[in-house]
Amino acid sequence: MDASQGMRFLTSSSSKVLGSSAAFHLELDRSSRMQSVDLEMSSALNTFNSVRWWYHKEECFSKCVAKTSRTWQRRIKETYLNSSQRLDHLNPPHRLKVRANAVVQKGMNTLDQGEIHVKSTRTKFLQNDVGPNLTVLEAQARVCTGPTQTRPLDEAQAYKVLDAILKTVRGELPDEEKVSEAQMGAFFGAMTLRANAFPRETQWSEGERKALTEMWPYLYEKLPREVLFLADPEGTIMGGLSPVGPTFVGSRDADVRLVGALREILVGEHLGFEEVVMLLKDVLPRRGPEEGSLVEVSDALLAAFMICQRMNIETDRELKAYCMAFDNELGPLAVADVKSLTHYGEPYDGNTRFFRSTLFVAAVRASYGESCLIHGVNCMPPKKGVTEEQMLKLMGAATTLSPKAAVQLIEDQDIGFAYISQREARPSLYSLVDLREHIKKRPPIATTEKVQHYIKATGREAMMASFYHEGYEDPILMLIRRRGVDAGLVIKGEEGALSLTTKEQSPDAVVKGRPLNYCAGFRPQKIATEQCRNPDGLLREAFALEVKARDYGIAPTSTPRTDRSVKKNLELGLAALRGEKGPAYDRIILNAAVADHLLGCNGAEDPIAAAERAKEAIDSGKALNAVLKYIECSQHVVS
Image 1 (cartoon, rainbow, N blue to C red):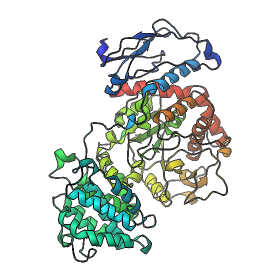
Image 2 (image 1 turned 120 degrees about the vertical axis):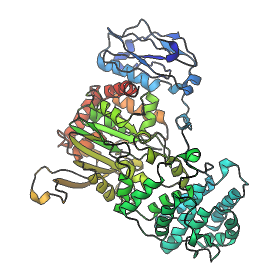
Image 3 (image 1 turned 180 degrees about the vertical axis):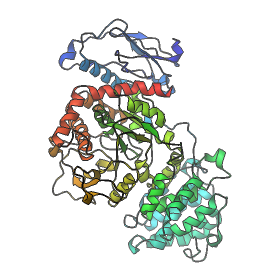
Image 4 (image 1 turned 45 degrees about the horizontal axis):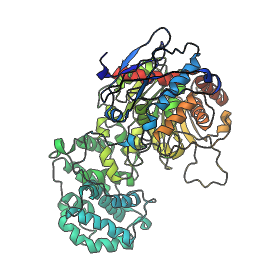
């Protein structure tokens, strides 16, 4: 094999992966019986183009080829090989510990905290690719939100924002500090909606009114026509100083339908299902400045449309349209021949504070036949937190699976789970990623992307999705029901994610909206009677409760913090799958057991029994084995 290709060798006869294209150190767990293991290492050739791994074990070895990423080519200083030492005296659980430690250690000694977020060379999807301006982003966080959450700007803040916009359109700021047209559209669209339709408490403050009155004549001379329209669509807000709005129909053909919809949205009205679907298909996918400059809708109009629909609080019809508009983008659904499949809908923007457990929970559940599908992205605004894709990348797994490729992993009885990126499965929705950074707050798609249906199962299907703001739990459950699955569950976990906490909440704690660990959903009715038949003809049992760890035989423990560290999140999860007891272990057990019990899975009727089954999956090494095999096989199915 040519050294320029790079080689990885697997550490078991069932082709369990030991590492990836990144160089890493084998660090054996020296606790308990592992102290007797002395794995001698010697150095091997390393070049900027490749890394060669030689690792002998038992009666056979397998070869896996992967190109070394440029990032790691720069960072690799030395690699290690072992051509003589054998691990015959280790039993299978200990071999898993060795391989898991290898996964945790690979490359982590040189991993910078922010490296996972390094900008890629992907196409940029904005027409006006400057900024975003931080001052205006801060203002958007205050004013581009709901009727009761909006916090009006004071006079100083308003002047500062308008000054940044004026300097931008005058060409007085460098590109990286400019206010993008998407930001201008989101800001002025939000200001117009607040003036027209919000309660008195969240309409314009006196400071905002004073700043706009003084600076509008200067802004009017320089702002793009799309932004002038958004700032005063009917010519009634700026005291007759904005004649563009009433006659504006758009600067491109693609603008026309969107301008008409915005006239409704900016006065607090709503759109129908078909209207939203047609609009989305008109404007997506975004193609970027090189391909779409003459035909794409403007950044300003699309940003205003996205954020103002959310500020209006979407109707069920609007959410359904956002959810299902691109269901057939890649053709018919791929089908997995499995008895059970659970779809996990985590927030795509990740976790910034607490341990994100879903990847490890999926491996646990898959190891006893509850197949799982996770979907998301690498990095998404506004939080840009830790995601499953980042963890999988760091372990060396492929993250470019198509739905059909993911089916192969789900159907593999030794794996049983898969991850699909929105980039591969819904390119139209993914093309909004840059716009979402510039509008600051979450658009309607942030809710509906959690309820995407990428793969269908021949057997029983369940769907889970997270929520944070009160009032979204019922609409999300409505969307899950529309997917035609057998069971559905919405969860308010920590950071608005799916991960339930084992922490015991103080009885004196003040809770805004639903409490932490609140769950609601539906599952197949155990006792079939006509009285429990739903309007859609299915027998379903509805439920709502607050999950307590004690009910699953788990003592309360503190919440593991990761604080934006992909490395820390991965270390906690893999240590737990190695069987190390602690808060991360307990959290994975709880989340697996709750999913099994509340979704009505076979063998999980009793919550204590459900937790014991999850513990056995970890302690036996099955869950860890599934993760390690996933790393290897995911590379094979995309090659």
